Length: 408
Image 1 (cartoon, rainbow, N blue to C red):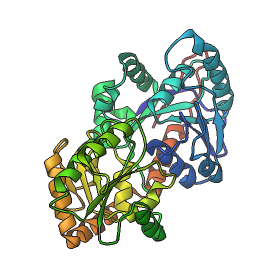
Image 2: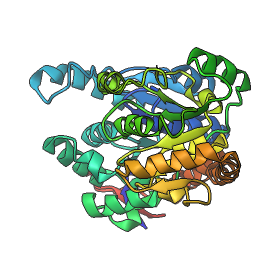
Image 3: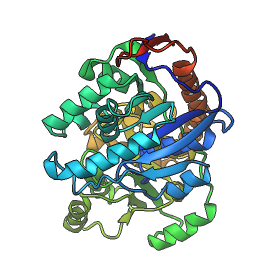
Image 4: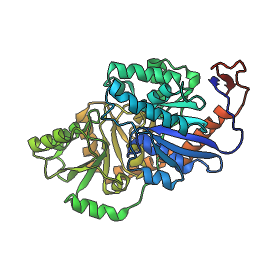
């Protein structure tokens, strides 16, 4: 592959990586960056986080992993649109970014806002190699404004390499953003082993007012459109007579909370559906479930499916995006078509009725999760970083802004 970049001036010591992200809240991409901060070898890599707007709940874990954390100071509410009032704040953030990346080798911008900022800042903060990410699919991008989609495409094209977390996301980077295949790398997400808080099963189920005889269906994800959460209420309604032992827990928070509350009220599901809300340690709740369900309309490579698999849960999911790259239906999960509420209900009912099937699929899912070990993510990412920086060439000698080229 031919890539273009300015030559590094520092030839020894660890490779310095700056993960650029809006914040370190408990999102999927943020969790993956944190895994890298924890698992990349400290002797070879030095990690820092540059946060566009705020710190977030994962900052303590990042600092415990030895990463420095800096906030650039872009206020999301103040800069919600593109206007002159945001300019002074943006200029201050740009100056801070330039200072904080002066000694950085690679800026890895995983999400759209980060890519847009990095691409915009690059003419003023030249030097680091820029990496971007493709972790959502086109139907998610389609919900954004036309200007936002255009900026995202322009930014993606200015990245040296785009890292996709699934083959389908890589294909969309080629088709929708026009990125050449030679500039795309597929590196799947990693999953941490199950947290193993067996003691939380009893306390969680007591808090939900469920007893040991009931079969608990869990779903972890933000309460937002596209996650199929309202469909799960329909499933609960359809199965309440056929499978009275079933109970449902939705873990997360977001703009659909009032719609979910209205649906629970309308269908009189108070006794069998719980809105758990956000949980700082959601991974420890998987052990409280008997079945995991995800009814999303779109996914890149869903961390929650990996987490459910690593917890040994039988999984029912819609065959969207990278989900079908993780699971094979009737082997290590049950996949149904997007929007097929009847299929979701049928699969949940089948699992509720058959503990042996739950055990078989859960064991197979656990075995499958081993393919997504953090060490694999770290090894693949480290190889990419080293490949981008491994062959030094002289920078342009005529004093202009042209970059040198290297093979990788």
